[in-house]
Image 1 (cartoon, helix red, strand yellow):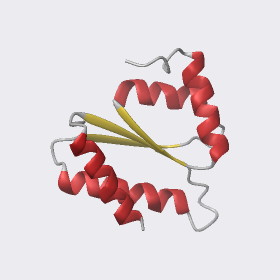
Image 2 (tube, helix red, strand yellow):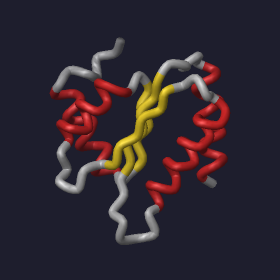
Image 3 (cartoon, rainbow, N blue to C red):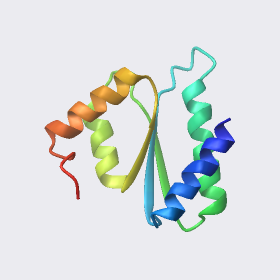
Image 4 (cartoon, rainbow, N blue to C red):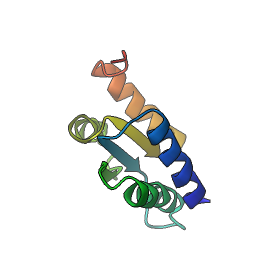
Length: 106
């Protein structure tokens, strides 16, 4: 369930001492049963509940596939990024991140 995933994400954050900020990017067509929205909601709620000092920002993936705006959001708001959506969306985001040289590590 989404809450179990949220609990797992909390344990990851805690284990690696990722305690400053996280970004959530999700797909939400608002035409179906919205599975990606409800999954990422479980992550958001868990982090909000168990890590009150963690800053969590979220953004819906744009309808126009504007990957550059997503990368700008990630640059400004995320140290750790959780992405929930179709594989093609993840692929597009990763290609844009690579293009902007964000995939070479810290």
